[in-house]
Image (cartoon, rainbow, N blue to C red; front, top):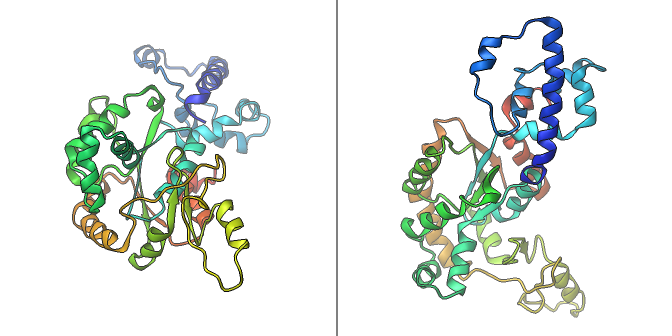
Length: 329
């Protein structure tokens, strides 16, 4: 659901408009003066449908079988899904290194049809291309230190202007400092927008070391694997051929992506020494971001020290509007 289904959403809104116009005409309760001054949105306002401002609502469909609303929902079940998460989502996946952002981000993309913007991936691409900014970032990343704001912000600001972000986007790895968060606020305010959701994935520090030292990733897709907890099929096959008691070692030959069969890679700072410094930086520079967004009521805590599927269920609940969670819609 999202930018790939914009035509369907337009059709849904047109049908809702026709039905509501008929209902309003029958009741004679339409307020012409308000309608004439109301600005028409270029985006289908299905969100208003759910809030009950229009007569056709998903809640109404469940309460009044056979009503106009139930007809729309039955014919267009996308309305319920879209209404859960609309309007435009600007999501930040927040958490310590190894908290599971890379694992959950692709699921957010699948659910909402939004691009996940990982500054880490973009920076590493610049490093691989040996660009001037990439060379500057390389030495900093190898030490486990944070890349300067001016480098990161320039990349993000340019990326969110792309057409695939018109219905929203999910940020993974940005902002990492309060100044970055303030700069993001300034950029979004130009367009009359703000961050809609900050998801804080919580994991105890002692669990993070095992996660960090065992994780591998697919560079092109961002798919994340772990030698112990989520190994690719290639490593499982490799281990099955070992003699009893023999311990296998993960490498680029036996760690291959399940979908493309391409070699996976490890970040150069995925080691114990770098993690210690990264956690110190996180506590000192990144944690204040929660306080920055906290007064807006958009920060949601998710226990990420549980099964991956359980984390995803909690994350979906966090992304769902509160009154819809209460209504179990």
